[in-house]
Length: 175
Image (tube, rainbow, N blue to C red; front, side):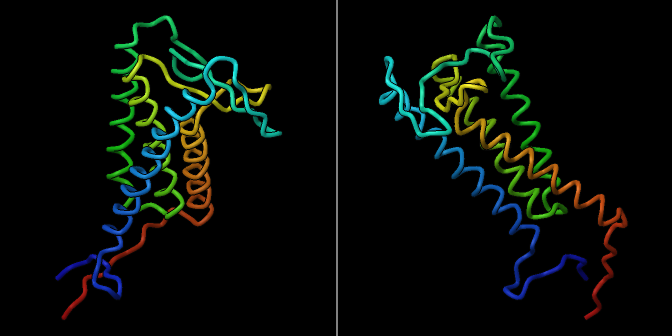
């Protein structure tokens, strides 16, 4: 006797959520990491591309968010951000079976953004940034993933709190 719900195709929705989480995180991280060398190549020197609301301008961040900790040894920053990234990934992996789809995508984007920045920093001890607004510090696609992912998780939590906190009761199925 099993209490797991099963979709019409015979798969557990929990596995589906985890698969979507993993694929979204992997594809998003791959895209962010693939853009980094392109940005370095085309925006090096004083090259800048004006896209209206945002300009593409090359910058490097040896610290974490808003260049905080930029004087710390890069090995410390890499180790700490990697540790935080792994912690978030483990928490997400364990919580997504019971999470709303919005949170699943949000967690995937957070993990992709954090992992992309860790890998980028590990390659040359700094993160490559290229989106510049003029009113906000320069950032990259991975930072956008982090922000959007955080917003999606918060929205999911807000919907959860308005729905009520009663857990869903799963009754055993007798065959």
